[in-house]
Length: 145
View: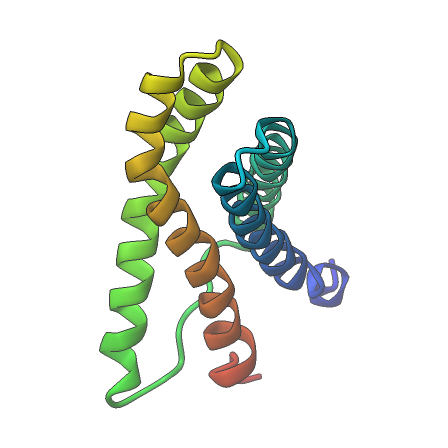
């Protein structure tokens, strides 16, 4: 199979990550304005986009495998710090996001707030660094042919 057929996939994943980050920020703004209905729909959309990203990411890497970082010098430890922190926090975000959605939909506001206090900055970090990792791997330090 030709490698070109899936060359668009990392950009799709980065776009989904970026959309998630924007939705998280918009959802935060809605809740600060006490617009619970808009907050709920925005955050459920963010959760849905994040699930779509996760499915797409897993499918892509099950076909392609890992992508090696080609940067050298000072950027290499920076990249791996971002990648490792991104990966660890992404694993934490998944169950916390599920809890936040469940508590929110059940109108358990105190529990929802307790989870989201930790989830919100982690989820935003994971979404933004996902886009950053994409640029580092595919644009700034791409694979050599």
